Length: 153
Image 1 (cartoon, helix red, strand yellow):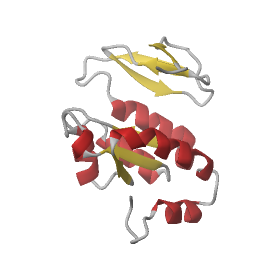
Image 2 (image 1 turned 90 degrees about the vertical axis):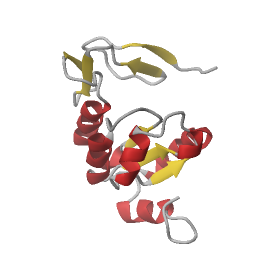
Image 3 (image 1 turned 120 degrees about the horizontal axis):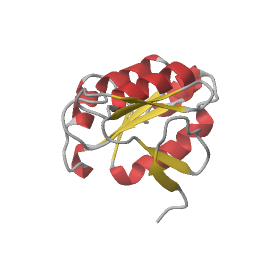
């Protein structure tokens, strides 16, 4: 299905092209500036928490990061999406029509933490389109996020 390799992360793993790391249960994952994965055991619920990961990514990559939140329960991800958006990054949420559970993504949309709402089948293409634009001045990126009617698409 994909050329990407997927595996559970270990403390100290380093980000690399073509590799997807999954946070182990009962842990939170953060990124270090050198690209290392930092895992912390936690009793907090939810664990893993996407808020923790997104905040660390926003701190390191700022306006060069893309946050994506998809179907899921409760509100985990809202603070992380806000952190990415506040850092100048771009945030994407899965739309209601393609969500099994319209919870996490709905909460992020309602909190004003989402730039783009898209059908699950369109999210990958939106990411591919955004990556080269993230290196342009922010004013140009904001213009490119607008639809023809002046609203975010």
